[in-house]
Image (spheres, one colour):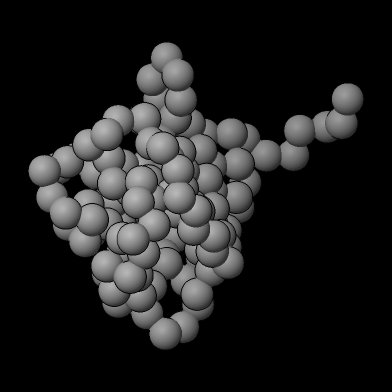
Length: 120
């Protein structure tokens, strides 16, 4: 076994997962879904990105520290509507690597799920 060189901090932990894990300069979120599942995909995207902003702030990292964003959509026909919100949020500088796939999410009420990796 190697020597551990950083402390791992887990934030908002449940029996199953942590919403945020910080290991040294590395920051990872769990999959984030909307709090308001009555909203359309644009509204759910705004909701999830606001949660992501809050978690990044708790880790003392801004959007410029994002390395990768993984997006799951329940319906790929929502791709453009999601992108209109995401593109405005991410801005024109510091875009992370990104993937977006269609997937059956844990609840039919969820239209989008986002997971992110960042570096402080």
